[in-house]
Length: 94
Image 1 (cartoon, rainbow, N blue to C red):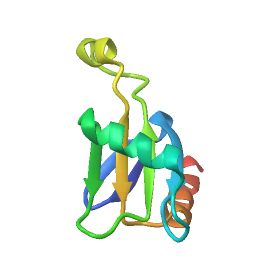
Image 2 (image 1 turned 90 degrees about the vertical axis):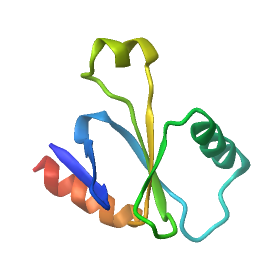
Image 3 (image 1 turned 60 degrees about the vertical axis):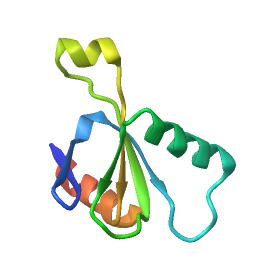
Image 4 (image 1 turned 180 degrees about the horizontal axis):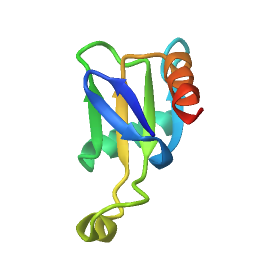
């Protein structure tokens, strides 16, 4: 199944490692460092133009030979909340 992360961005459900909250509390230094590194490595994507409320980390399990060599993860910043994405993930798994 696939998960729609917003603004036309779709992620394969089996590739998702986690959905992490950015809304509300200030993120930790480790989270900020991770997101900076993802941006530097060009693996971060923005799903929509709004301020992101959460981010997803996905690593492709089935991918092309070129992608396997790179072992690249995707970090998708979404304007949807973790509850909304979690609900969508639960519905897609049923």
